[in-house]
Length: 425
Image (cartoon, rainbow, N blue to C red; front, side, top):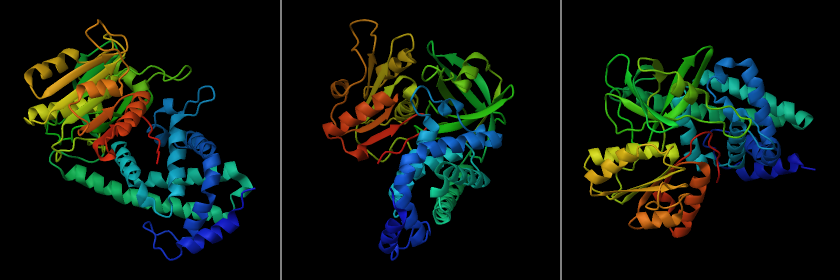
């Protein structure tokens, strides 16, 4: 049986002399650290319970989440509860030095700003999380343990609130910036393939918009029928003060039994030029490193080309002479977006190389997919390049692993995952 008290005394002695970056007491740090294995065992059940309770009681928070990520299929776990369970588990494990999670904290803060998360919602989520802990663990969640986890949550929440306030102020104070939601009009709708459509959006007030960092995303808040919800989409064009292009895939059910993409289906099938949506300022920590002079390798899978397309357009528009390799992997030519557009960029810029890889090639001139390290080695001049990766999880995980084996340092590997992000140390 897991014995908490001796572990708490041991950890308490260890941390009693170290000031905590979030202001947590040594006793709280020791208690959370000692009970981290319990949360690791029951974390998914706790977060699953939390979301179920919260969505029933707080519909204003429910609209901020993609409900497809709440669906369990077969013996699988729903993505959103799994993501939160992993994040809370990581926080518990690193409670003695949470700044080791600075990358994850920064990424989550950007996501919250894009979704317009406001401070009072932290109180609601905290109450629901602690209630779920007690509901799942029962008498094992003693008052001292609940008090410690409550203090740990409030310390992290306070840190997030301060960090997100800074991000909001920076977004508001930049040229063409704002805070919260801003109305945009769909000016054009362009079919890129059988499953991908681009939407050109301009601000309703006709004033300028802020310049995004190439690779960043926005939050899109839309209402249709009785449904109001929010999604994140990457800005798929070079930075400019007039308009943004969102290139969006019509999402099918992620797995049998899951719902199809609610917002993407609406945008593809019903949204028209002249319709209005609400957008956030650009957010995200995946963007071009403008200080680096290394060759640039943009590795994309399917609609994951969107942040890399923004980077490519920016490099070309600014006349940057670094060598750029753009690798795009797709299932087949029917679903492939922007083949002619990318080919045109390649023909006009001697420093740009574009390589198309198909799971089902249209002819023998193209290599067969999926994208592998061998494809990348054939396309990229050398491994001392900055790699930007975005695509399906299977491709991303495989390519990242192989690039590290090839000897590419972590500092030159940048990647963007779509959907709930699961922390992995």
